[in-house]
Length: 316
Image (cartoon, rainbow, N blue to C red; front, side):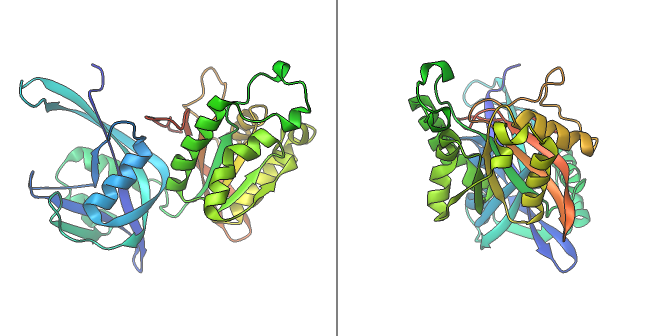
C-alpha cells in the first residue's frame, strides 16, 4: 500500500537534574497521551514538519538531532470511509526555548523521565519510539556533512576546477539546504576549499553571521594522500562540540563515512552493496558521543538524499 498521509514529530527532550526528561502531550480530541507530531504541509520536508508541529503543539522550539523511528498505521479517509496508510517519522528534538500554553490540539504537557513517560503513553507504537530514543544518550554531538550541490559537468568547465560554481539547479539545492540545515542547529561552518563547496553552505554561514572555514584535509586532493588525517580532522571538529556543518566532495564523503562506521562496527543501512551514498546536495547527519578530549565516537548516521521535500532519512 502506498503512503497516503505523511506526518512527523519528535521525542522532545531537555536536560534535568535527574537526567533527561521527555515531553508527553494530551490531545483532548482523542483523549490520549502521545509524543508531539502532526501532518506535513504541501512542499514541506519532514524535519520542517517535525519542528513546526512541535512549536504548534508544545510552544517549544526544537533543535533536531538523529532520526529515531517511523510508525505506520491506517486511518479512515474523510467522506468515504476508505482506509489510508499514514506514516509518522520521529526525530530526537532538544527543547531550547519556549513555554507551553494549552491550545486546540494539546491541553496538557508533562515533562517526565523516560520510565514515567512510557507508562503514560497510550499507544504501544509511541512506547516503541521512546525506547528507540532511549537506546542512545540524548545529548549527542551532531555533525552535518553535506556534499556540494550540482555544479554542472567538469568537462564543460574550461577554467580552474577549484572555481567551478554551482549551476542553477545547484543554487536551488543550496537554497533548500539553507532551509533544512538550520533545523539541526549548526553553529560553525567548514568547507573543502572549492567554490562549489563553499557556495553550498555560504547561505547558512551568512544567516549565522559567521565565516566559512576552509578545510583542505576534507577536499579530494587533501584527503586521499592521507585519509587518516582527514578522518582525524573530522573527529577533532566533532570533539570540539557544538553542531558543526561541513561541506565536502563526492570523492571524500563515502570513504569518510564508511571509515567512521567501520571503526565503531556501525551498520549503514543507507548503503547499497557496500557503497555509501553521497548524491549532490545530500546530507549525512552524524551523531557522536563526545567526552572532553576523548576522540568522538560515531553512534548513529542518517542519510538524507535530497534537501527538497520530502526527504526521508535512511537510518544507520
